[in-house]
Image 1: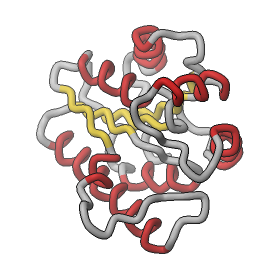
Image 2 (image 1 turned 60 degrees about the vertical axis):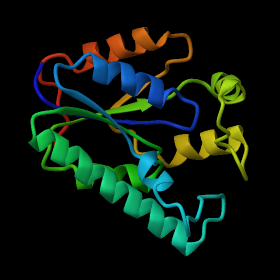
Image 3 (image 1 turned 180 degrees about the vertical axis):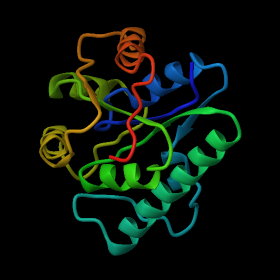
Image 4 (image 1 turned 90 degrees about the vertical axis):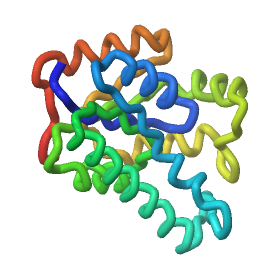
Length: 179
């Protein structure tokens, strides 16, 4: 398998972490890079995203995206395939694709139906939906996110089936560049 950067997004509880970890494990030299780790590194002065985010929360979001993109490029430049996953909604997805424009990027948008997301959110140890409903964020994600890359409805799939579909979709040199 050629070295590549997979960029995985979707609403909270869509399966990004699970799919990304499994996908990275299928690579000879694979890294699972969780963009959210850069948010959690801010231990004092962190501003959380919300339905009405502060300027500082937005600044920290773009800092997180920049750090994640730079980490992905550094791993790639040092011989690793990377699976970078985070919440890239609307214009933020285009921003991330621009950050990675000189690299072979395979974009995956996980899009299980809203009822599946609601069930997954209830089963998770962490709470992602604070300040807005699953239905609202799901609807806004679908409306605002550019229809680029491979959109996968994983509602009725196991993580293994989803990863197999991703690998089948990008078989060979199905690399997205300069989007």
